[in-house]
Image 1 (cartoon, rainbow, N blue to C red):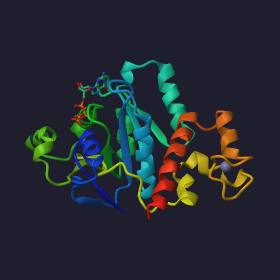
Image 2: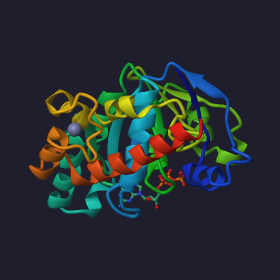
Image 3: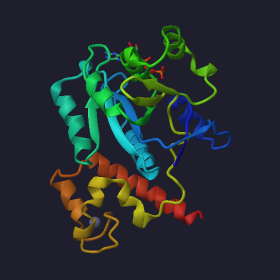
Length: 249
Ligand SMILES: Nc1nc2c(ncn2[C@@H]2O[C@H](COP(=O)(O)OP(=O)(O)OP(=O)(O)O)[C@@H](O)[C@H]2O)c(=O)[nH]1
Ligand SMILES: [Zn+2]
């Protein structure tokens, strides 16, 4: 399993659109999990991007973990709303506030013994989170501040920060592209949405794509609130893309 990673996710999206000079970084192997770091607010979560990232993580046989930082900025109701979207998919959801030191222990526990990559838009608080974990860095004091301060522009290679709790975290995260892999076919696609795939056997047709087919258990689950409507909407949009990629082969 290989991830091409680059340092600034915002930069990635801008670079990918023209599809000419894609900026890639040296690949890293054997990643256990991708920590998709978002902010609850400032910036608000980009659910489209999150769903793309969960797909890419699963496709790369890696576990997606959702971290929503800046939890101090929103109400309990908003936290519950966010949690319910992804718990239905069985993804682990961690709420953190690097400002108020909330959820840092849970994050630490999740990183323990694993090789992780932090992925997320600029400004969600990735550096702040790494700083909150900083006391656990297994480095000489001088080295710590240099590593955490080092600008993205000077980072030319992928580096994993070794924490004393026995976890490695890549400090220059991101996927090289948010494109769906070209070799996904429509019949396999629902596998990348675990909460949709769970209903596959209950649909009338075994080949159901959960789109326009009758007696579709997925559509029923959406109407009953068992699958998030927004996740289903993204599933349909991405499915269109998968189908059009098939045609361009
Ligand atoms: N309210 C609040 N603000 C936070 C929190 N964490 C980070 N911030 C603020 O959010 C801004 C961005 O934080 P960074 O840690 O630089 O975010 P980043 O994801 O590393 O951003 P890049 O370095 O651009 O990739 C800063 O102004 C932080 O002070 C938090 O938990 N709560
Ligand atoms: Zn169906």
